[in-house]
Image 1: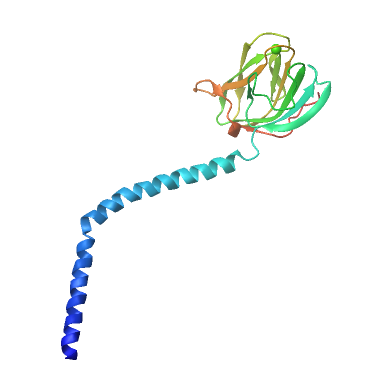
Image 2: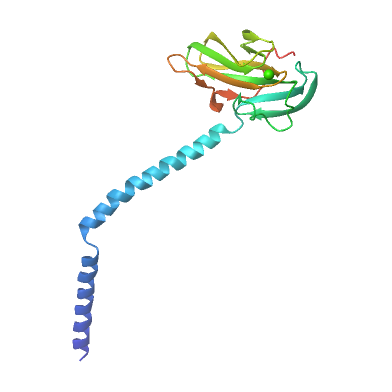
Length: 202
Ligand SMILES: [Ca+2]
């Protein structure tokens, strides 16, 4: 009798084994792996990219010293701006509509040696120094104006200072560049870092 039970049990186990393998055929499992593996790789890639982008972004940009008056007459506040790209409504809270000035200081990174074009689109005045040398000087009241200049740079970080003032009416400042062989675009935060710029003597 016990042999009979053992036999039935063995048969059931064999049946279960067969039915289990029948429920998990080889080909769909391979297909599933083929579909899921790229998905995992894709998610991992975006996750790593997100993490590295956020670590890379930390502390980047330029120090912005905001002042009342068109010539830095009264200090208002300091903050780090990750990009210099402000139009009429884009300036930080606490900045008056009219009669203010900003000094951004830090460094700009040249990823390769060559001639860089720097461009400022502004209303009103701007002036820019790189490596303590004047690059753009348009310190006057005007409507939106594009100023640009070519600068030879070695690979690496270079001290930068950018002054801007707004008098009345419209206000804007946008900081662009074109690295060697590339199109003009806004200077991305990863190419800017806050820090002392030698020659910043007001
Ligand atoms: Ca203006």
